[in-house]
Image (cartoon, rainbow, N blue to C red; front, side, top):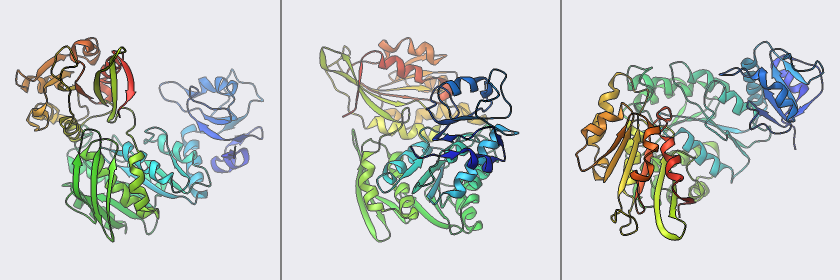
Length: 476
């Protein structure tokens, strides 16, 4: 395997000290997923990574990036010692970026960052060697880790950049130095840390602060804060490319959301596109259009990319569809599960409700006889002082009103549950764990089931409980 870091290169990058000559083929921050030959980075979070250095070396780590030698590690252990481990990781990321000739895209947005990153990985990997994080590594340690893992010979790289508080995105963008910066959308998320949507948009817009000279900003032209984003792009001298359903050089001309796919027609400068995604969803379609604009901005072939987008599937917990066979002896006794339990805000919930409203339940296969569209919803978190109203007002969503039954978990979702008509009101529990304990009574064969909520609501417990009712297979 080609070396990612030699001891000499790592010392030069970090200005640290090492006691041996080693070669690392990867970078790891977790001994549970560490591979032989990785450089283990002893970050301090809930636990101090120095407590795991001995285990990392026993599992085959090439060396460990530390601020001191742990007491249970011998003096001859291969260590790279720096004053501060996180700063050392950042230095590795900056050095990896400096030596790379890859065309780099940075992605942010209130909704759809990880799905968009994975769309780009899918299409760019078929046009060259593409580097992207395997998970949602988008914070102050995830971005430098992604960069530190970037192979020197990568043709493309995609870096996801997130935030929870003001001032977080710009330093990560400057570290990344992207050629293209994309903002998927600006929506009501993290309002506990921002006064309003304009505040969120202003923070998202700082992803353009790190653009390379001549860089391109690919921006959602439909959203109310688009002008704010465009103003920032103009301030940094970026070329602006807009995408959307109604606005932009890259624009959806026709959209068909079906049971299992989304068919999209797009007009753009010089070419029209017709392609499909393997999952339903207007939000997925809009991001896919932005992805084509990013592909072209990176120098890739957008026509080939449009054809390859059909190979993309959502990451786990972000709209993944699967069929659960409830009776192993009866192949027709199934339900359709949409796992969207990783995150939620009013915008993403509305998009998911549109998806399930297009689902097709099946009658005559379950004990209820009539198949149903069912939503199981957990609290949407970090919405600020208007959080109660945002939950309650979802009862007015037209797609939600088309559903047969809504189950809710959490103190915030109780406000939505109380606003539902009796015919739609299912179960409400104070916690997702309580709702998960009722899984067998919440759903039935023939149902189409959406599970969605913020990660902190633990609504994924309900997904796991429903899966345990049957045998999982991919949606066909």
